[in-house]
Length: 409
Ligand code: GLV
Ligand code: MN
Ligand code: MN
Image (cartoon, rainbow, N blue to C red):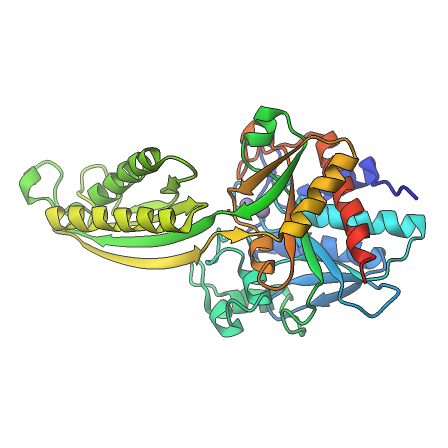
């Protein structure tokens, strides 16, 4: 029997969630564990319950909706995240969660039972925009970070994950990782330009590149911008600017998949006529190759040490996140490709440039990802867009693959 995802049901659900924390331009701001995130969570939990799912909340705020199977076996799990960056689009993460629920709706409507249960999850703080590390909920779920350490992660205002989870009512009772799936599949928008440029419908994701996030705090000396000779300056802002330029040149020189971003920078006192005495900035380095990522880290660190010495400023480094590249399960990757091709959708094998909950779940069970195109490769931007036909096609690949996996003994 052919079971079809329903266009208007999926697109309507995406529209509805996008109204929560809506920002100008069509995007969303639902930072992890904020009031907006709570409202988004409440909506998705209500949808899960309306679909008849058994809803479980764990001690790090991950939420899992379970559709029982005919047999008491480990479930096949799908899912993603519903938190966003402050300038987020409406599809990043949300699409994977709501497509998972659309699969459940379609199975319910067709009256189909599966041998294994099917679980649809959303994980806490995937984005890492408010609390670090990113992929926090799935990392805890996979056993990569203890609860107490996760609870202690604090945002810029000193509010902690533990307190914020309690405040919004999402500190659940279940032990993270208590449900160990037989397989995990995450459907996500590509967030990069490859599929759109090559006019390919489905990305068959083989791996996720390694991620290195470091925050640097630079201490110099404030002084008068007009009277302080250049030779006497101890300018914290100069180091930050120099690292930004260096990181760009380094990524260009290394080529391949190396990328480098200085995405956050704060100067103090941040005044036109005062040499900054403090700079806090972040460095985000990523590469599909661990050895190359290590090389990039070492070269950035060496540059910082050299400029700090010349400028006579002190530097403190704090690692905010560090994850090695992840290779997905080859057998499952093949099945993603198979189901896309069976629907006559063009495919391309590719690594993921962005971080995903799936990279944590691969520690627990065989995992793979399905990508759909992002128009012009825009993401973490309110203009993030994927054509409705692509959203529906990706969800259909997910449905067909989950059905296969859920019948496996
Ligand atoms: C998460 O969205 C990341 O890749 O930064
Ligand atoms: Mn995402
Ligand atoms: Mn994101």
